Length: 136
Image 1 (tube, rainbow, N blue to C red):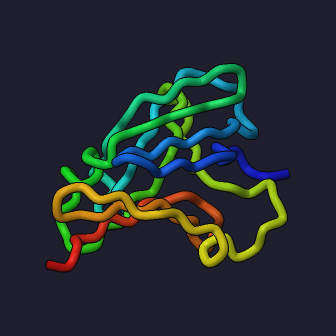
Image 2: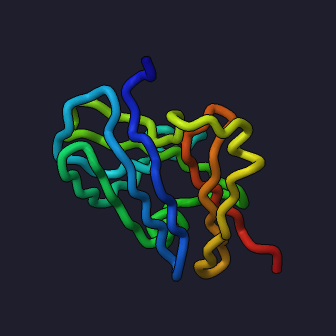
């Protein structure tokens, strides 16, 4: 049995926003927010609203919330679904048979100011964002 997590079904990076649709697995559903946690500075977290209907969740956020909190030339943000403070579920895609998602499933980068933000799957099949300063 898979550990509790937020199973990604769709990722839509478009027009400076990223929309994520999925299902809550292994936990009773609850009101939620999306927590974007900086990988190297775990106390740096930005939140955005998420809607939950039954076990389904959906969230959409402007990439500006990530670029405004990024400090380096290359920052990684890990995505978590915060279930009203009861649990923080890692957002990922685990319930399919696609191996090596990091290489196979790629998403376009979205530009904002000096930054480009791109969702990607980690080697552990979790969803993260890379925020990179664009070359001048």
